Each structure stands twice: as C-alpha cells, then as structure tokens.
Image (cartoon, rainbow, N blue to C red):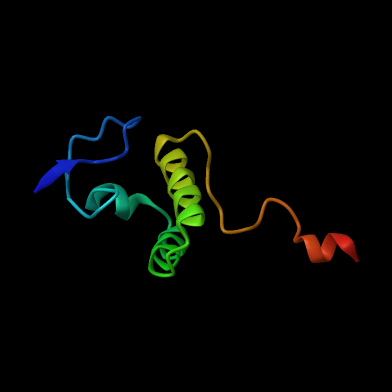
Length: 81
C-alpha cells in the first residue's frame, strides 16, 4: 500500500511504503549520519530518540534548520568537570 510522504511541509507528492516514514527521494536527501542514527534508534526501539531525530530530518528537508553531526551543546559530563 502506498501512502504520501510524511514530509508535510515540503508538500512531497512521492509515495512511500506503509512501513516507511520518508519516501525514498526524501530519505536520500537526509545526511547519511542522520539516516544512520534514525535507523539505529528504530532498531533499538528508542521511540523518543527516533521521533526527535525524525523531526530534525524534517526540519533539514524543509530548510528551516540545517543538521550537522556535531553536537550543539557539550556533553553534561564534560560540562561538570
């Protein structure tokens, strides 16, 4: 069964499979590191992390927020030292 891509803001007209979140075109536009993080979170059943990463991917596709693999904030352990 084909469904519309979840990238609502992009108004993507491409179809995706029932179990997919992004269509193949949008998925290929997401940076490889972010795709890997989404896939890993999905396999490990980390739902909150997966949803947050998907939101970052949507923002990247919309052009509202560029995504980079560098962390925005320093780790809490580093900040405590």
